[in-house]
Image 1: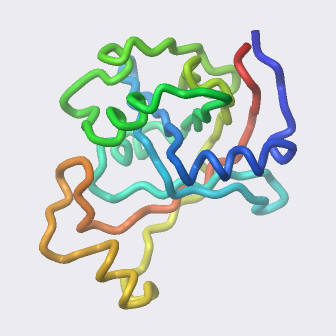
Image 2: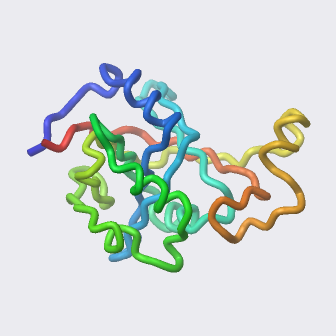
Length: 178
């Protein structure tokens, strides 16, 4: 069962969860991939509710988002198995089926082709309205040194050489799986 919610009634909980990590789930064909993110925000853009997710250029998630510009944000409610976040944040979906390895329960999306994850029941279904690559020159030098070192490759999870793309996802459905 799904209980529809007003996303802004849960804004505090969602943003607190983002600080600890939530899942960003994508899908192309029958390939589903969930990635832990800790950079994201809620807002209103063009009069529409949005979740802005930041995904590094070299990530498999980026490849999937560019092929299917829809995603879900999966947020824990109550106790959460932190192993899910650790696994989804340290392994690439290029090399494994994270949902299968973690035995996650995928529930079909209502307004998007991407599933919700029952184990993280607060779900935002999003359609990408806009995307923007961060401009290196616009980022303060101290942040660039800390977050984007030039001597680290970008092809593995946790690598951080490449910059982020901001994906503005219009929140088209918000609910809690019960």
